[in-house]
Image 1 (cartoon, rainbow, N blue to C red):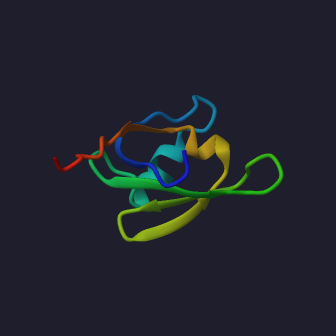
Image 2: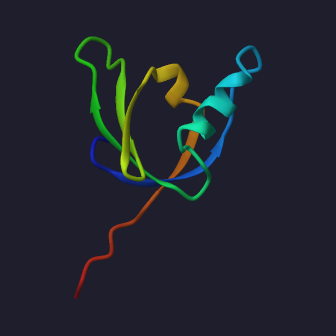
Length: 78
């Protein structure tokens, strides 16, 4: 969901594109890094605008699907 705060859990590249894992790691998609979906492209939602740490990237949906995340729960003050 757009704006939802997550953290990278792991990368899983397709068997026919194993280099995607290295490419994603090289630009900062490392386990434990904070990640947020900022926007989706108008037609079909491609590309996705992703913020990882302090950097922002446009990824195709196929590339973004390699990034497994855990959603962070917002803590509500009582």
